[in-house]
Amino acid sequence: MDTSASTLAAPAPRRLRIAIIGAGMAGILAAIRLKEAGTHELVVFEKADRIGGTWRENTYPGLTCDVPAHAYTYSFAPNPDWSSFLAPGPEIQRYFEDVVRRYAIAPLIRFGCAIRSCRFDDTRRLWTITDDQGRDDDFDVVIAATGVLHHPSMPALPGLGEFAGACFHSARWDHGVALDGRRIAVVGSGSTGVQIVSALAGRAARLYHIQRTPQWIMPMPNEPYSEAQRAAFRADPGLIDEIRYGEHYTGLVRRFTRAIIDADAPEMHEIETIVRDNLERSVRDPQLREALRPNYRAACKRLIYSSDYYDKIQQPDVEAVVGAIECIEPEGVRMKDGSLKEADVLVLATGFQADRFVRPIKVRGRGAADLDAQWTPSPSAYLGITLPSFPNFFMLNGPTGPVGNFSLIDIAERQWAYIEQLLAPLARAECALVELRADTLRAYDERRITAARRTIFGSGCSSWYLDATGVPASWPWTYEAFAEQTAKPQAGDYLFTA
Ligand SMILES: Cc1cc2nc3c(=O)[nH]c(=O)nc-3n(C[C@H](O)[C@H](O)[C@H](O)COP(=O)(O)OP(=O)(O)OC[C@H]3O[C@@H](n4cnc5c(N)ncnc54)[C@H](O)[C@@H]3O)c2cc1C
Image 1 (tube, rainbow, N blue to C red):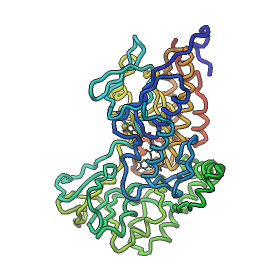
Image 2: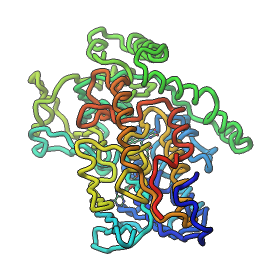
Image 3: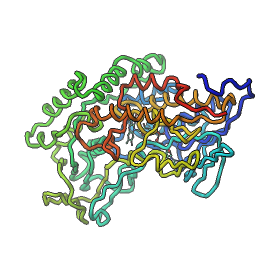
Image 4: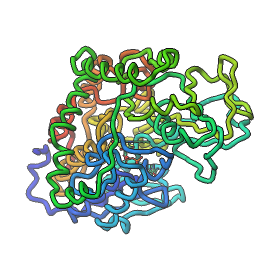
């Protein structure tokens, strides 16, 4: 990449001090890549006492990834040992722990270190990072890998504090609470709610799945891999590549993103037909079938993948409760229709505050630019990575990146490859600062918002894809477009300050 500062006479390479905030999938990726490059000094800040992010915090029964496990794997660390097509959550956590061990990343991580603020000093051209103990540290570059679905969203239900039984959010599962033979109410019908209900059916004495809006369900078989298959993966990594890069999965992703951006595309009608047939075929009782029929288009909310939800919800011990909650009472959940769903355990599968990203960290950029102000009412970042006024500050899985029914590892790897190219002129000392141009973001947002309104996400449902202004916040173009635009930074998009 040509930079405007590249005419400087062959300066000596610079060893950069780089801070990575977060040791989830994305922060680990950045740490491995930077460690491998071997040129810079690295510190990874992680507020928890273990790596893993999402997979450390979500330990609920039934958790699996909902993309093929072989695609939810770093490209450089394939895992022939996945136990099933969609791997269980604890196995994914073990995978990340194993990768961290193999790449010897742990010594770089400061655990139990929650970052409170990042302040850019215009004079020294450094970022000062402050943790919750008030300790400061200076860095040339900050990589924020603080997560997308990280801050639990607690519903504002009257009486929630009065519930007499055990109550917890799905991302804060209380494993000390007995489940077998108890009455359990699960609130929320996103992927998590569906996975929990499928897992607990047959275990609880009575299981209520309380949902304001039912979901379209895409059938997705989850077959275990046999030992023979795993041995074959070990012997021939090409078999893993075939799952990850082969036409079956990549074709699905391609068709899916095409459907998302063009609600009238044949690919969208194909999805609609599959989910409608699934509902018609799987739910026998016509009354229940109608109750479970969403009144919005498929994929408007994130599509739910499940092979067994419809079977489980029809078991005699399970009840789908479709409707609004009036309040929580000590004995259970009072619905607006007056019925009381008595429960011993209340699980809030109510999702995450999907607009937080780096926040609540206070980030002050050039000229004390305030990230929170820049992100009010809704956050944006160029390709989910960079922002004007925040030089040498890069995000992984930041706002407006693709989030959907495909592997976020692939997305993060593409973003990282892009960031590496922006770090290169800094490391070659061709410039001291790389900063997105304000007009680059402005033009991007104009195009993005226009395109986003036309996506299926904007077709008339409420979902966590929508930002505070009602615009779908996710990448509104094809997967291929994301791959193309992140392949190489355009020098004209950035200011390179010597
Ligand atoms: C239940 C669930 C299922 C999912 N399933 C899939 C799936 O099947 N496929 C898929 O592609 N994606 C899935 N996702 C999305 C998932 O979040 C991403 O795939 C991925 O794990 C995100 O990694 P990350 O590193 O960006 O963020 P996270 O995993 O959230 O990690 C962020 C890390 O940053 C740390 N951190 C945050 N703030 C601070 C701070 N101030 N100071 C220090 N440390 C901080 C956190 O403690 C955490 O460890 C799922 C998400 C959830 C919640």
